[in-house]
Image 1 (cartoon, helix red, strand yellow):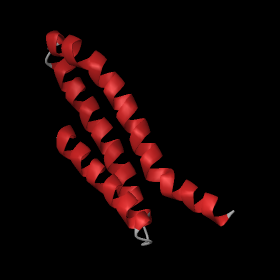
Image 2 (image 1 turned 90 degrees about the vertical axis):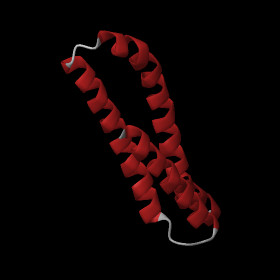
Image 3 (image 1 turned 60 degrees about the horizontal axis):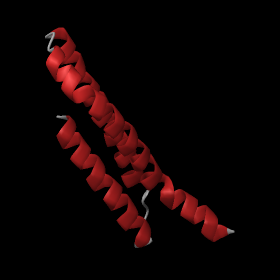
Length: 94
């Protein structure tokens, strides 16, 4: 599930940047991109919680250290890309 939500977050972020570039209202796409990013992180956390309940320690040891870094990087990137149009608008108004 986290993979599907992540793909939707990427698509919404691309739509956000495209709508900004074409001069259309991008705020709904920005909200969707940030919302699906949050849902992706929560879905991944739920997957890890399932592994803990199942006591699947090998899965936790293999996946969690790498996924933690990846989630941080991808979440920060998503936030920056989704709010970039707001900063660009502020810069152009000055």
